[in-house]
Length: 254
Length: 327
Image (cartoon, rainbow over all chains, first blue to last red; front, side, top):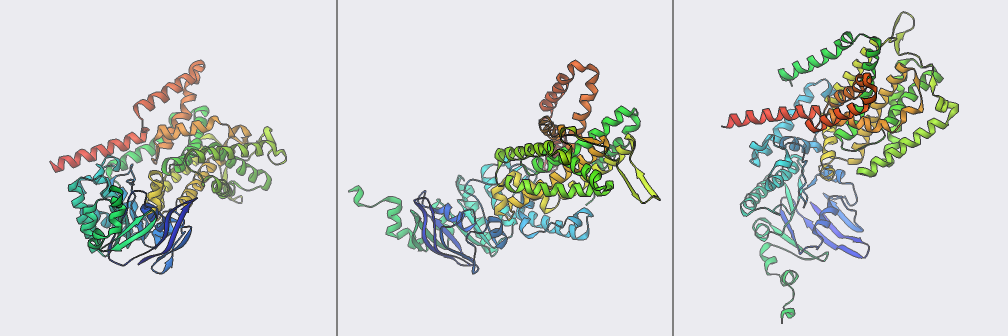
């Protein structure tokens, strides 16, 4: 579904992402791990158009999307969440979800002006969608709460909700479990699995190893901008290069 | 969607008051002030679109107001356009100027955007002041024809007194408010607010921030320019004074006290801060002090603006109703 070919981005002399070849297949949950500063979020920013690659290609369903603006990439079918929680703080949960439907709705000013049947139909469909997500995330009680007044965990869930409301087929989650307590993390992994079961492909960055090992079909490891491993959770946990990246070489302790 | 009963009553009550107002205040002078209040409301409505809804503080409103006044006057004086065509021309050209100024300015964000719009406002001021052949410079334009609509000689309405003009501008203001209220229900309206709340997230759900902001900016220029056009054909004189800085602050005060990002806020704020200075004219020495005192009181008791407070009340009522249902 998504394929990166020799993807590279350099900021001056710093090569943040270096010749990365990576592919994501439809319907899988792919995890990306790596030490801090390995270039994971930078990689996400490249895929979603927030950064323009220095060289290399990003193919989404066969089309090169490298360097397109974020809004265009979203309209092609990719949606993301952010490492630092991003919701619409002044809007209620309900309004946040309705705003998320932007991609697949149309403006139709005249229909809205006269409140035609077309307007009502679209409105109903949006509300149905938002209602389903509210139920899915078990946030019915917070429907009219402004996002800024939600607990941190709820804000993170709402962020996923906004992404779901956009009905994109490919979701990138940047550290969805960051700052969550064990209970919230547990709920989150269920939510992510259920999203995959809806047929949405998921690519996530996460430091929470239990979560990553538990739900990912496949994991890739980034270190200093290079991809150093690609395999099942079990293979990754035994990969000497990965262990080295996280814990350092054995000689150093000798 | 059917409007809730209470909201319907409130709205029709407010509109009825606006319709009856010039019959309560019958003096030509007070009617004149009412018309001016409505005219300045357009400037506040325009600022509300770009600043209130879209979150981009633009400091060019008075310039766009004056620009609208000049465009409309020049179309009437130099090209002999009838009022209706002056109005349409003003809308089109205001949108055009909005595009030209928005294109470079909207590349920037936050205060940098604001400062750039202010710079363009100053440029417009200098052009208008110095292009004497076209604008007569500081002497201003005189002899602007009154507003009127007509088909030849058989059917003609001329808005030649304060009362008629009041109803013309009131109708236009209510139409603009209705238009905006509906616009804010569309996907585009939600995109305005989304950008105000979080530009990055907006982009990630498919909103193109630059172009959506551009539409908001052009719309703001059109609404403000329309106010300028009404101003020109009412006062029948425009001069570069209209560009002055003082009005930038005043427009912001109108929007903020009325309620940022609410539909009716600018109308209320615009009315208060046009009428108030006139009310206090009786005590000339203390006038500005009193206006300032009222401003401070509003900011203390209505920090979200007057309509913002109404929105809060409505939310709180809904919340308690929900809690009662759950209990």
